[in-house]
Image 1 (cartoon, one colour):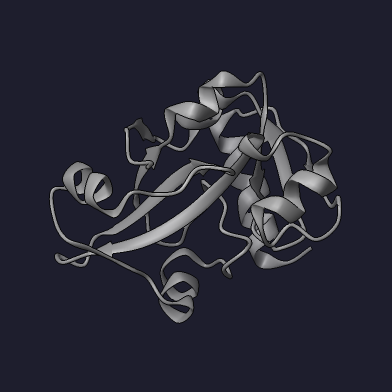
Image 2 (cartoon, rainbow, N blue to C red):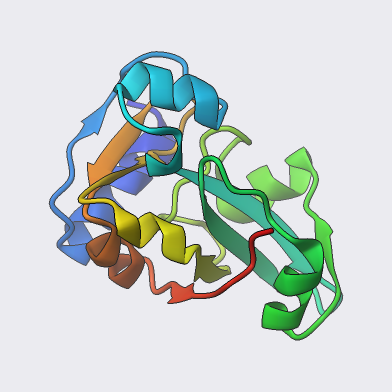
Length: 154
């Protein structure tokens, strides 16, 4: 088991989130993940990492079919944001792009969640690698990772 996968499994256990990590196939994109998991596109939790002007890391958990609105995201963050590059994502979160989990980060980001995720009984999130996911009830997931809901999609 990879270090990042083990970190997510441990974080799920500590959070008391009942979720089983599975390897359904390639899950680098929301479309790939939905096909592999056999679910609706919006049941996939996209993890979008941004960095604020202050250096603060922000993780936006977005429904698979939604797009982040930069202006709304800036307003919620209260500062200017730029997309974190692949090296920074790996260094700060411990995950590669395509496998960023909502919890188990090396450096805790501010986490905001798309209210669209609440429209489902369960959602699928990355489990630390581009091939592993876990399913969870969305309210429990949002609580477990300390996210707050915010209207940041277009």
